[in-house]
Image 1 (cartoon, rainbow, N blue to C red):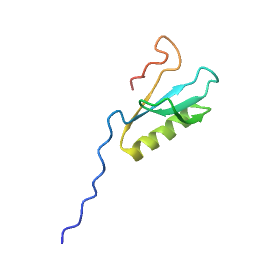
Image 2 (cartoon, rainbow, N blue to C red):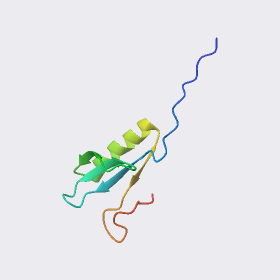
Image 3 (spheres, rainbow, N blue to C red):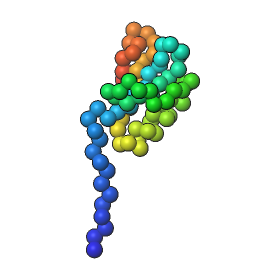
Length: 79
């Protein structure tokens, strides 16, 4: 009998995480695309990116980081 192949579910449309800095208190927030609900807050960008990267990998989706300074503030950063 052949072994069953594990099938991962296809990512949902707009299934990505976003990472941005809150203007009110300067904390980094993680949220899902299309949602206003904040999943988790962090004091540093590095902590937030590590957490978001792990969540995205577990869900099989990507994540985007928004710029916190300069003329591109609020826009998605290109890496």
